[in-house]
Length: 190
Image 1 (spheres, helix red, strand yellow):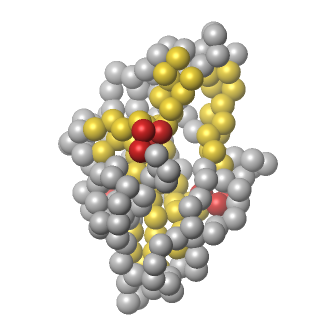
Image 2: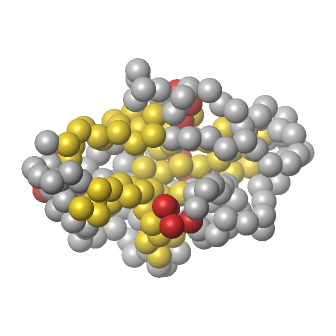
């Protein structure tokens, strides 16, 4: 059987126990909005302010791939990438953590409440380094990890580990909304 997967976003609750596990597909386009609040609501509330100097940060987004329909054998080799072009405007970027906090169908041990606008590499204990999402293209994707048994997804409800995203807005940014960007998750299924 061909697998069916969704992207989920965990938020709220307490460390290691998210309050909500949100299927991103149910939010409608745009499916994720970076802002200064920890919720999945797509609205114009809690916008990211442009700082007079330096950089401001959104609340981080803790995302993962979730298996809705199990594959015949397994899913592995999960990759993340973009088209490589940042169309968000001058002074705006989205970073991805280069460590992948633990998430399985049984536990969210790597989950850390996004309760601050601190840069994720100092505010999230599971993420110490990050890079622009635009560094990763189909020709050079970022490998994501799976914390399930055997490092594979082979049952309904199994997940990848978290991949954490955060928007940065520098003092050089212009006021107003940004363009939408598309991120791709690719995997092997056998």
